[in-house]
Amino acid sequence: MKNKNSNNLFYISLPENWADQTCHTFTGPEIENFRHNLIVTCEKKNDKTHDLTSLARTRIEHLRQNLQGIEILKSEEKKLLSSGRTAFEVVYKYTPDGGGTIYQKQVFVLEDKKLFTFTASFLKETLQTIGAQVDEIIDSFRPHSNRLVEKF
Image (cartoon, rainbow, N blue to C red; front, top):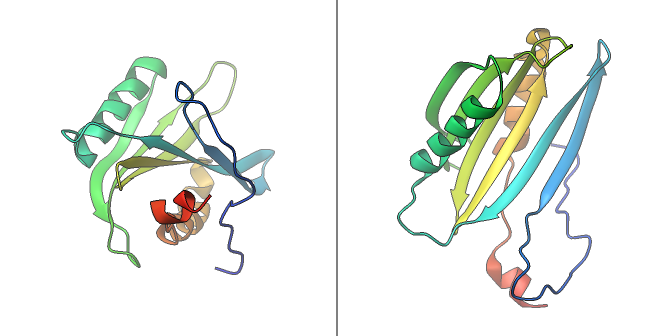
């Protein structure tokens, strides 16, 4: 990986009744008028009874309820190669109204009571090629420790 992006652009203080629902969007190459992207979200989980698989399956069920004609192509737990972290991956396709078929991959990582969700969009032709780049990006993921945040 040539470019490293820690996204430490700013610090902000929020009142107790506000929540950080951080979302980062990374854009990839444009192919056949389709802009590839990777969206990373972070959701704090305070409930200790949830494990990675149950959280992922809840999200997958939400996809099934909200995306007309969704077809799940892959749904399984996996290990990230360089970090050895356990992740859960789902690959699916759907056709939005008036558009072509979109392929998406979601990878869920549970770390320090935070659920990180990586969502990438592809064309059928790029699922393997750009998909391999996305796998490398996700494999490079290293969350900041809470100690770093607490310094502010």
